[in-house]
Length: 168
Image (cartoon, rainbow, N blue to C red; front, side, top):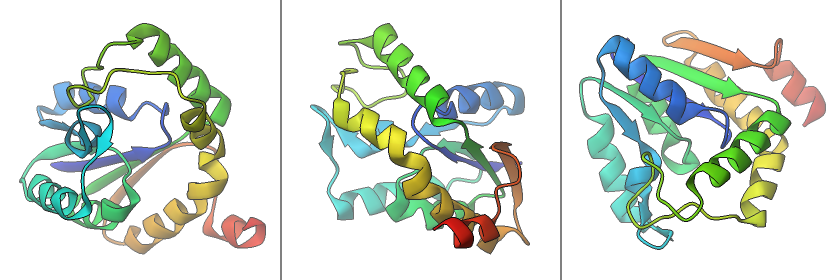
């Protein structure tokens, strides 16, 4: 395990797990949030972000946490191990609120400078709807890599591509 991609909902524990694994495996951690966001919560423009992301995944050894769907396929292709944190939306919401209370008005260690933690209803709605909006897409993406990647799944048991076809 030299290139590990960690994906999952906001509040699933991606950053926490990446730091823990980095210490155990002696790998550098890349928090995508700290590269994507510009001060004042401004998004990077698409070309700039693509260029930054490409440079990040070219490294020989890393743990990268974050989703960013527009670049996920490239990141998963570059990884030798993919960890998907697929936890209950209530747990993720609780962790997001807890994180807000811990860092309110301050910038988290895994976030870009100038992006202080703030309470945002739109963000909470995004976390709440993450499972139905993104889970099946993730299942499909991971299914494409199942034969040549080490995929670790932490979360809902027995969630399969067939369930996505049936329910979505």
